[in-house]
Image 1 (spheres, rainbow, N blue to C red):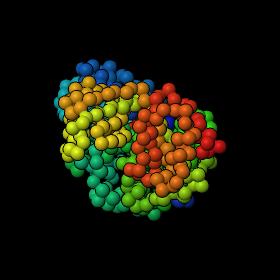
Image 2: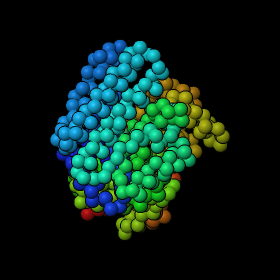
Image 3: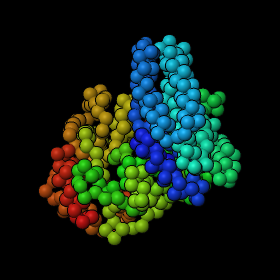
Image 4: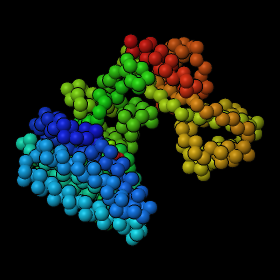
Length: 446
Ligand code: ASP
Ligand code: MG
């Protein structure tokens, strides 16, 4: 059971988590928690401030967040626990003050210090959550995730070493679970073989949960967040949005690009490897079932599961007569993007042109300059990608016709279909998003 930052944002959120865990008590849960909301950002900000030299100011900037932890302990745990937690917190503060000073003096590699600093969010939230669960008569025990998850030394986005991690999790957690204890660990944080603290990248707690769930061959991995599962579309664009009951791993991966609310495909890979279902649920509405992500989802009668979108997209079109019948042309184009470290999202090609979309245009001037050597380049800003996801979309006659006839008044700038059997992607002007999504949603879901 993984709880995200907003699921542990304050005392009432912690209390809700305790009840959610209690409901699963008979199923031998393991709890993974994110830092309290905003704490990771605050720690990263403190690191940046310390880098500029003023480490005392940097340290002071985190104080309000320490107080949030104290307040939760005061509201939800007994006196002895408060004294214990406060001493842990004081200890953490001293270490953080020292680390921030080292940052300002550059006395250790900065990337290493950054991970050490940012890890305190999860170190503290997991200690606090274990105390809260104990206060609610649950048999919880905080475990240091850095002793369970072994990674390489890519600070900030470390990659777990599966065989070692799997063994450690089994050896350390299995006996506790068998004895009826509930292990509570911080997500996101890990350690290298030499014992240095590392982190798994922003949002990495989901990854931790998937690693633990996979290593223990859990019956289900639950991701508790602040929305009720994965929705049929963005509720801010169309208020008819509703929760999707089941998705396949592949569909979830296609949707992941379109919003932070959906799991990153990398983070659920361990679950995919062991075919463990992942459930996304809402800690504010725990009785709702949320979305279940499974190896294969049921084929819905009208096929379509979700309509995702992303705005702020730029199209680049490269046209060149030299491309006809030439080899190496695509490679030459893609190398330019690689050189400028820019991600391409959707690509379509014809005999003499290539169109592609970008959502990060930081390097666009340099890219266009290089591309101009290969052909004529046109830029179309203010576009949006629409991604229609559904099982077996590619093999289902008439679906594309139905999609495009529903929005026949809209100009489509680019279409990509067929690479994956679960999605159809197209690009429209940004100001058409509401119109397009509302029409499609009405047609396919109402
Ligand atoms: N606390 C980390 C972050 O904010 C990890 C997580 O929440 O998953 O990125
Ligand atoms: Mg988070």
